[in-house]
Image (cartoon, rainbow, N blue to C red; front, side, top):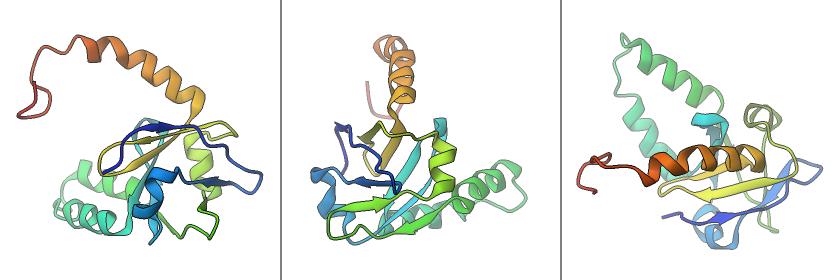
Length: 143
């Protein structure tokens, strides 16, 4: 399980050092892909395989399912952290997420998300009021 917020820097070769608390789980290998709200999703290889199995259950006749799977899979890249716990973010994914030097990496339960720090700060600011004012059940069984 991934949680917490970290602020690594993107180096000149497009690499980040994985947060220490995530390394054990991510060191065997990861899959990075486009995420929603223009962040990147980072899955363990095993979690991505499970995600893949669920997504491919959508019927080919469902246009939303086709679009979602295209976005997820066409941007996916399998990566292996090096001995210094750095991982390269492919150029197409850096462009998708608008990543510059300052990054915010968050744990989001079953995945890690990589955000441009300014984009994360704006998102967080936008969401604070709606999060504070939730009065209905958003996730079944919670609140």
